Image (cartoon, rainbow over all chains, first blue to last red):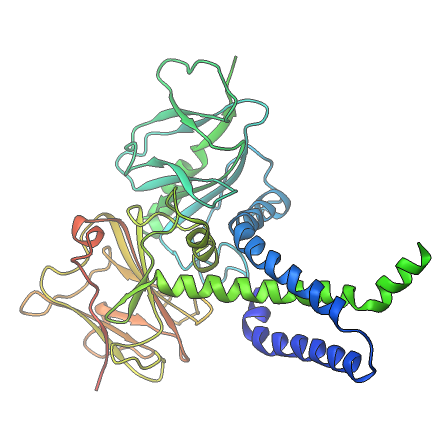
Length: 217
Length: 200
């Protein structure tokens, strides 16, 4: 679908605009009123363009949410507050239009959708032993990455991170680090480096251990 | 009431709403593409957007980023460059051979890894008989006598230079260069990727 839109976007747009031009031409030619049409079009145009721009990041992130919660990455839908590690790297055999067609043949991806409305979640990391990895948290309303856990930001040692929503007032257990999410939802994307084909099974075992669990009261 | 409904259906307001929505959508796309171009820096043919994914970006920047590079890493996590052109502005094609020449010590410094991947123009990897889909810091690249490194980007194997060969698709293609945990020289902009040069 994306590919079709990419390929035929311009002719398609031209056809749609031509149809509108014809409709307007017919109205004018038959002597019908054009003012209400024009006023409605200009108002919707003027309000709609900024609205689309404002909503675009949210629409994009929600596309990922749908991909995760409705379709998953090969093993069926991924429930909220669950992280799923894709077993293989990107390759030419990845299906067209898949969000996994990233061109990154040296990373295992982890995907999940965070819902903190019923309380905080704990992100558990195994000891990554110096291996490059990152877990990115993306705010669905702005598409900004509000937090990272990983080699760059927190190091590669084992650890537990409390992900809390805006209203949470509890205390963070000893030994855990708090990450405050600006909203109750967030997109989670993990990346685990794969050194070589023979390293893939080791990387996959580590990737699967990056998991979420509810914070125990 | 019935009169009002009749006027509503006859007046063209509905067509106007639909037309306005379509125009609004197209205008939004054009604006986001224009902002995307404005925040893209291109050096030696390689394009990158350094500001995406950062908290605090304005509405236009956020939208342009979401359109160009949806949910992308921040630049200090992973630097991405793409190009569909060689250094002289010609479209990259598998009908030609290209060389990417790194002077001695000028492979991109990083704290994780780097990788160069060719894809088709839409960004999908393309099968090749050798099953080599990227070269990077883990590739056993041969150095020239002066310590520089040449990467050979072409559809057929370059005889004598197989270790430094990156097979490209037969048609038009795109290159993606990724550096994870890029070094300081990349982050401050002093490091630039060399141009892709068409072989004679």
